Length: 447
Image 1 (cartoon, rainbow, N blue to C red):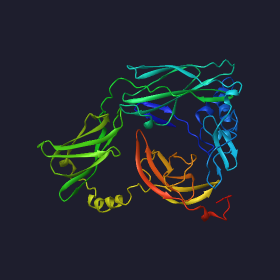
Image 2 (tube, rainbow, N blue to C red; image 1 turned 120 degrees about the vertical axis):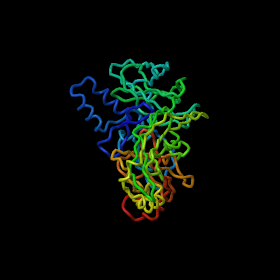
Image 3 (cartoon, rainbow, N blue to C red; image 1 turned 45 degrees about the vertical axis):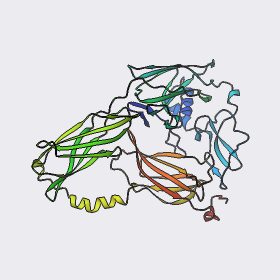
Image 4 (cartoon, rainbow, N blue to C red; image 1 turned 90 degrees about the vertical axis):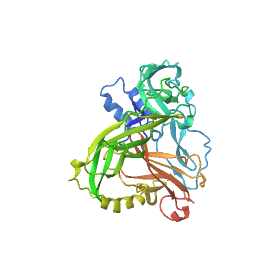
């Protein structure tokens, strides 16, 4: 899959997918498989067989797992390869969970954690060169996994950082991180992996940013007016556009519509960054209009007004258009008022695979290529342990199950569209049933 790290900066991100044979393992396990297959014939077949294997990870499970579990048992993994990074699948009194491996420093043959020596920004090429060193002297091939995370803004704020994503995999002790964007802070970390495994990632570098000032947003493209129709002698239509390229996240759009005959007769509107369309209302017949759209971003206290995208519209040429706006206003707006969360809802709770789960559904977007991000976490009213922190999953379909739920707990569920920029679609709160409701049912449920 591809994850956009910022305008122009795209990296391959590898996600864990429990109980899905078609999903790719996390970056360190994939690198381990590739390191073990570098000198063998039919490498791709070798890597595929390794990915589907149940290899144990180096190190041992912690002897004392100091966690506060719910009354119900927790089974979040069945083998080491279900767990990310250097975590192992560990058995304990309350269930089976992923835990960071102990005693990795004593495992022979594992490459040491790299030490990043230098990171040099190159303003002209919008890139940075990263160098590191390791004291590994073994004979087996080593692959270095380089990950990057970032946030937009004019001041460093670690709380705004996004997730780590894989930027590069190399057998060298340096790499170029390209397509850095002004107005963003970046961190880099590196892990060394061989066929035995890895000791994990280095400490993140100090934040790096380019000195250049972020550019203003480019002009919106593909402006067009569709769904043209007449109501009470005036014309209505939907103005739409494609989101422009921008160094910084778009805050909002500004739409300006004026007649060429009288520039003082102007329609102006501010449009949310979540939308790329606007309904033009009450345009006069036999009139030519000049319509402009520009994006606005923010850098600290400075507002960056983007380049204008524009289109001409002559209502004289649109007299035969007959989109039914009367029906639209009577029905569509009324429907939207009752579906502001994009139809996001829970269709019920159930117990499966040793977990309390809920089936979440929502109204699909019009594009068949839409991708969704579903996030849920317990509210402060729940007695949540560290196990029950925020969880997120990606989906291509307008439905998914949320899992690892606690009994009798209120959850906040957020639905977002994942495209060039993340767009929030809806938020709901759901409350899980009490444990007693499941007493006597199959599934080893203890209340």
